[in-house]
Image (spheres, rainbow, N blue to C red):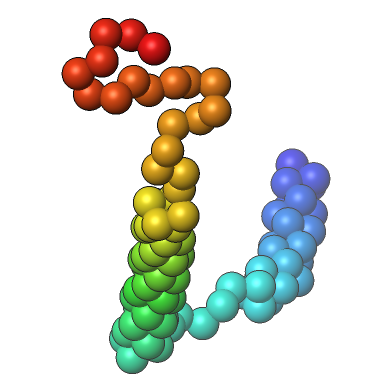
Length: 93
């Protein structure tokens, strides 16, 4: 029976020493204003990511359009040298 009180006393001392250390590891709660600021910042970051994506997409689309326009403008309108075309109305070349 004598061990039980010693155990209780030792356990209570250990908890008394450990409790303040555990309490110090917790962070204080955020205020509603701080949570709102963080939410706004997250929304702004997401909008910036979306805007960068849209700008990159528009840039690539414009590059493709320019490439197609260049091919149309500077492309070779005559057939390649290996292919012969016959004048209209002729029966073979």
